[in-house]
Length: 145
Image (cartoon, rainbow, N blue to C red):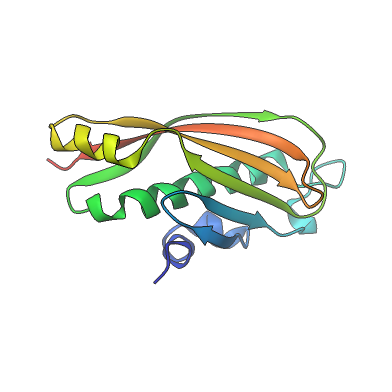
């Protein structure tokens, strides 16, 4: 099962929005939100809440891809998120997530008995490549008790 399939199976909101997980590696996660009238805002583009969910889902995908081998000893949790809407989004939008710290550094902190935190940066783009939004999610790996 791929990371995208796992997220679609375990995160109902990802299924609700019909998110498409195009790429999920430890280096990058790319998730697309199809253009769906049920999730439009008052100007006919994707609703801000749908774009937030898209970007947060991309961040979750890269976290699972990068740290899935740590799930037996730690739970990944989002600590906080900040999003900025830069340009009008219309039609299909895509979120591309990247880790803000090397995965090996995060795992080393976990190995040392710490609860590491790390940022994930996400760019939301329209089909023409214009960046319509940027999000940053701080994640932690909470060690199992």
